[in-house]
Image (tube, rainbow, N blue to C red; front, side, top):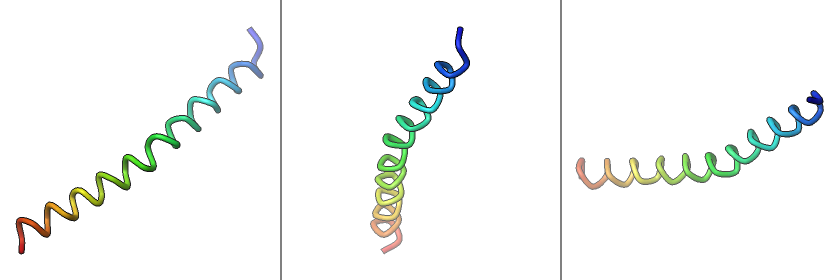
Length: 41
């Protein structure tokens, strides 16, 4: 097993998680912010 293949695979997985995680985190932040405004007035 080559180490460059493993490194490429791990980098691809990390980038994929960032592509999914950043918008997801932004959406969750906005949802929580909107919910707090709804319940606190």
